[in-house]
Length: 210
Length: 198
Image (cartoon, rainbow over all chains, first blue to last red):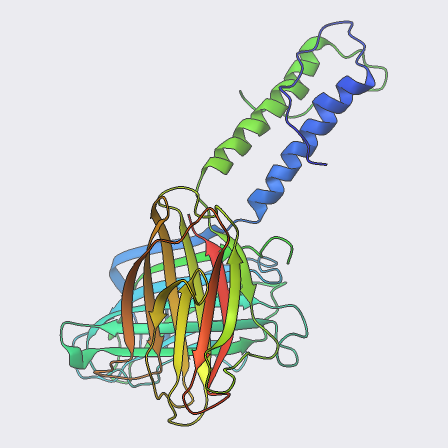
């Protein structure tokens, strides 16, 4: 039965509350509030937002340009981490790379739904969108617990400088611990070739009933 | 109405009206007011997140439903309400023709996206649609679609916008299809995520 809200009773001294009053004014109102909180809990929230007009440039090695540490136990089954990141490539012909990851910065345990390799050889603004879904155990390949998909667009006024990528991967991160979501940049030509400017990390809760 | 740390009651305590009003009535009113404020706000809410264990693919040469979700009646209840759809998938490793489409109101409704024949070979595709109510029985939708990796100079992405006049007071099917003029299993769906975005 759906609880109905009743304006809480104003109590009087020496009053002896009877059962219907206690049920209606305390039990039912508490149930109403709890049901409301459950609806709110099904909604998404913004976990992190960053903006830096100057931008964070890559160093000599692959560098995390934009990152957020997702707290332990944030991801439950069928919840989604949506990442939106933007930045720019310096306008030259040097080789540059952009990588979207979750997990550690380097190493085989990091998941990479998107990696351009050193194939970016022009300037322009870039944008990445990524969706990382926490999966129930056993849905994907053995041991996998996430599915990630991402796209990248690089645009400039010159059509010849456009670039795009779409990719995906399975993930094996333990979401009961912290997980780092980040975009990194690199250039064999050296530092400050790839910049990150904005970062938005949203959490979409699982659909009700999933 | 301010929140008061709820009283820890003592055995044998005679509860006064003042205590009940402060610690029960006023705290309930505080929580109700906070909940009303939250409920009136706009928050993304996931309606459906589908990642089948076996990715669906097109069958024969006919248009095949890869994903569908029935948007409940009146989800688009006020002007400005937005539903966002994200779909991703892949293609077979050949240069055969492949098409992926997105509909609002079923395949007989409004086509929001039609890739036309693509010949992408063992590549990923994705689209993100925003369906906005802009009037009674009126929607304005945008789609960002990308298929494959390419560049510089790649021409494998598109932005689309479509006006439609579906009846939002009834349930509306959001459908993603795949098709190939060559035969089965040329285009696969991996995920469809539907959210009420505002």
